[in-house]
Image (cartoon, rainbow, N blue to C red; front, side, top):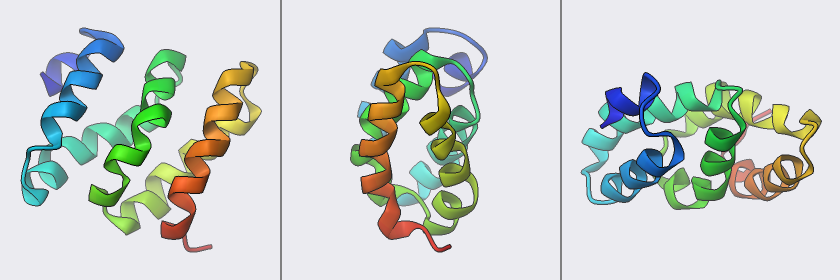
Length: 105
């Protein structure tokens, strides 16, 4: 499912299922398999994917490595502040509140 999603299959519906399944994975499996996909998806410019990430970030933030959040996710997350779609900007504000305790400036 991860590879299918990553290479353009299924969109946000598949990603929502992946996140649901990932809740049952061990921390090691989550870090090895799911975390890299999440990092790459935060680099994506596709609005539906970014919106899904932003909406579900509170479910996965505790499982993400703090260094990865600080170095790779946060810089991509803040690009949502300059998005032309208001709902992306609003959801970015909400997501920052979840992420900020892990960020070291």
